[in-house]
Length: 330
Image 1 (cartoon, rainbow, N blue to C red):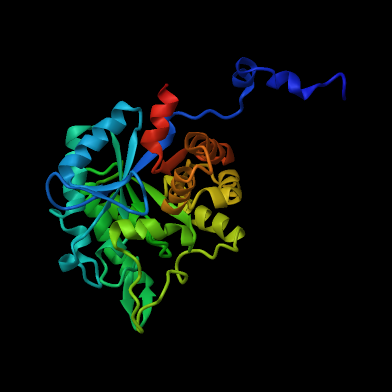
Image 2 (cartoon, rainbow, N blue to C red):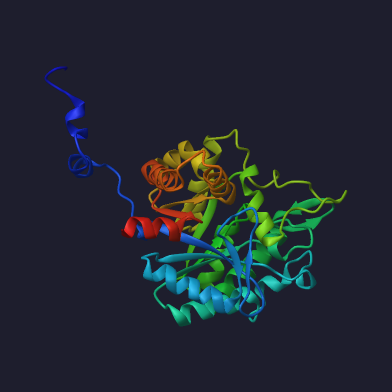
């Protein structure tokens, strides 16, 4: 009781604050999402994500090397697929010589210790912009799982350390785990997007990959039949527990800042590492406010990352990864 206890004694200066700080943050907490495009010496800015680019494979390798030198140990890979290669089944997704597969091999050749986690979902390969196969106006679950399994195997064969299914189909983690085991990929992990919400925060990401759902009468206008309702909390725990039971090594909550209650709930429920994706819209809002002088960019960036870590994240997938790493390394 006051005055025997004065809590401010532990806030007197930075030395004591750092000594008793409960949460730490370092570049090894980060995973860098990367967008890869066809071509050579390509660097295409994404207008809605200042500072983020679609890079050709040669420039992607330079980015990966820079990230590694900054202390970042993992990258999450997405590819911009040519419209000519898109279809409803996503066949290009398991082309052993596809852009994703080339990228995985090139990164592992250039920086063997970098953890490579390629995205597993059909939306970049779909003519409809959905994460699964469309039939009779619906995203069908089981046929999509078959495609995702082939995709995951192709990533494993290319050298991926983890596959990262982000589609939210029921049962896909079990199918992928069984296929990996049956084909000898015992050490390839699964980072499952277990609690991925149907969020409006994904807009800039869809600009980056040109992967928004198309506006056609016989195609669902959004992803709400498979991504989660943002009003729900208990459902996220169930999804995470199901994925762990099916063989997920890491579970993810997406988006980040607006879902920190879910991060903590999932962290308390599972006994595997928890990843959080600080998504494109969250990144874009900070950039836009900072450009207008409304917020201090670096302070907000670090504060948000600390909050995500404090909520229970073991891994933070963030477009701020390189900027934050440079600041922390100082």
